[in-house]
Length: 320
View 1: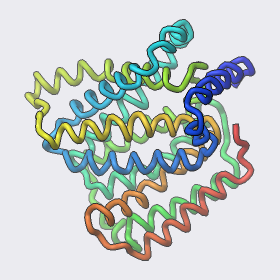
View 2: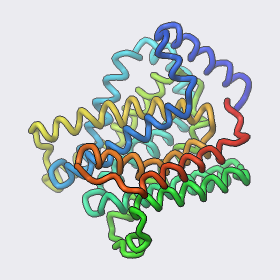
View 3: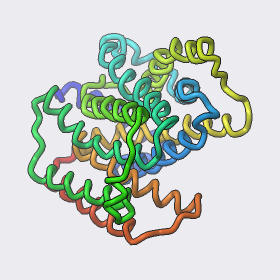
């Protein structure tokens, strides 16, 4: 990160803090921001699986990003106009990030959830920290530290404990299908998005969200037309579909991406990526609350291991 870019980005954040007041203090707690991100994304997986077969996957992704982008744009429009020259100069990286993290990731995930079980999707997403490290090495020749590798292994053990519910036979008995391939593709794309976030232009957070959301929606539009006209899969206008679109537009989109991008900027992609190990844990706890499932000892073991792994990964990691 060059000094010029750091200065520009810091100025934007200072201006934002003066406008938002005490709420801006939340931005000084990167681990809380990343935990909130995982909580919102856990709900996204539950909603995506719940409406699979009822709401078309590409339609859900397209309307999610269109609505989220328009909401952010309503507040960020003056800044978008002011910062447009910077966006235009860096259109290539904006296009790449929008494609990987917005258009492709969530669409592949929703398609995969049409055919695979939630437990498979959660298990596959635990591969993201490893893929982030591989992306960092391939693009930036960045090597993981010994603490980060140790933390990765410990957190992975915790995630496996939660997913298997303490029974290793569950992992051995999983059946894989084409939906798992889609989810793996989604995870690989988002790992790239996370690793490449450091290259985003020095624009304010709200502008970056608005531009990337709407760019991702524009990329999805031809695919949405193919799903609508070619496959005849129309978007139902009932309460279930509208509630799903409303939820995924606000919580896993606007709030989660704002929290995640800020967290990555402060602690780096490798440490932020390891928070993905919390997905099966938070998803399991949400199942206890909303689906009436039992709280197991494996949840407690997973919590201890995952948090320990996150602490090891963050050990010695400089905050930015």
